[in-house]
Image (cartoon, rainbow, N blue to C red):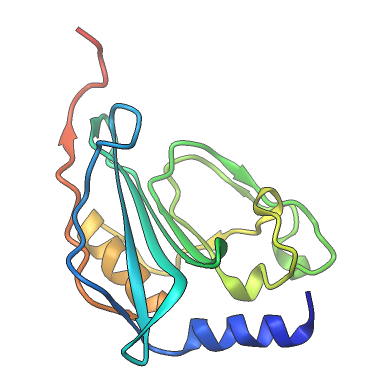
Length: 170
């Protein structure tokens, strides 16, 4: 892919986007204990094929984790992981800022996978670089607001209806 493709993705990221329709969390297409949604987005009020906001969240369990991902033609441009269940260690790809190389993020530590740190094509999600979230996100509603602002998306994403449990199967 060329520099012009990267610039086109930059433009998509920095242009205000709007959520098309109403976002509804569902657990129909997910394994148990998870919600998801996929919302089409408009760019300058025009529908753009392949531009989507995806959400994944815990439906129950001990922690109400949440992931929001902005994609363009399945290329992840931005991702927020709120209270993630797994740790992450950044690789050291040549295109990533060196201060983020090999940085370790324990589970339950919020992190952002920004396009600015992962601006490369072809995009390999297994080599994505995370960075710390600079805000204290105290709940899912605040995490959603933070993600929408970072992704330059206007619209409403309701909180998933997480039911806290001890995570024990009975």
